Length: 115
Image 1 (cartoon, rainbow, N blue to C red):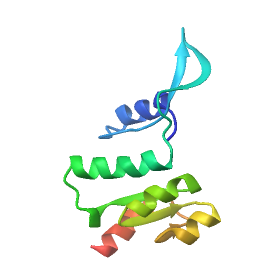
Image 2: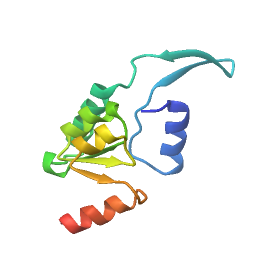
Image 3: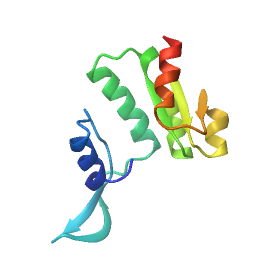
């Protein structure tokens, strides 16, 4: 989710393997108020999870999806473990686990404990 302008910057800076986001229409350095191409919606997020798992030979039972809003529920449902992170109530009730009062690193402890 989000926009390529920011996601690509973070992907490069943090040396991430992939970033998928909406592309803003920018002409001569100015935002045009449009999204270029397809919009990254709930289904695209779920499909991306599957594509990346296939690309890196990750078994389904090792897939994890984390989200905070209703547009993340399809992706979280497609993963073996769906994690609500500081999420809205509807997401917390449908997630496998919820992280409400910690940082992202709390997921590492969950994954280590499940090992």
